[in-house]
Image 1 (cartoon, chains in turn cyan, green):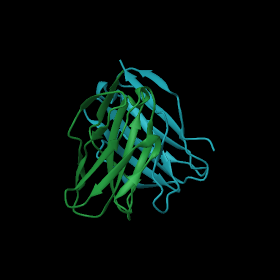
Image 2 (image 1 turned 30 degrees about the vertical axis):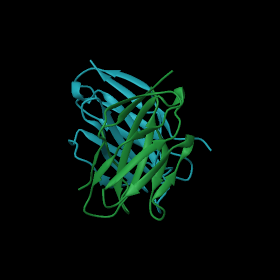
Image 3 (image 1 turned 90 degrees about the vertical axis):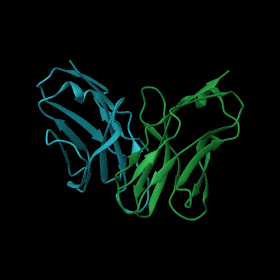
Image 4 (image 1 turned 180 degrees about the vertical axis):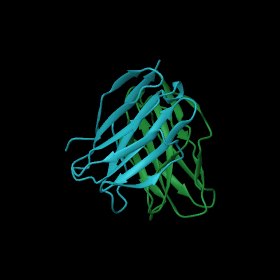
Length: 113
Length: 113
């Protein structure tokens, strides 16, 4: 079974631009969560989607948004990029019910110039 | 709210020696506990999880952890480490029934030949 796939793996943007990151969950998984990893703040929860609905949200500004499609694939969008948005963005999926833990992708490394 | 403290940011250990990575958590409700490992330029891989039942849980790659409710700890152990265990290790907690993980700041394990 294929794992969680994130594209692209690397991305370079400049301040003020916007960016969209993509995540394809493990087949059959309906829950997709996004995390930001930085050296200063560590791993922080952004939001979780389940069956195309945002089910949970972390403490990030509104510039960070996401969505989920009917095939459970998810996208994360960051608008008006700031230098501090440079990070590794990780996507994780799980079936969505029960106690199955989250399975992570390899992440998208976003660099802001 | 939940929080996780990993007491050691770096742990150097000689090959074939035992290792313990410490994790303490804080929560006013029942939680699930996890250990993840991150190799360079990769995402997070689940090592083991505690959901309920036996307080000693065994994971992949010879790792195990013990849940201690009275001390609110979930320390990770391995009796004999290998060079390939060099990586960053993250302890995480989630409220039972919730999907978002709260992570510790990580412990960098370096195995010395």
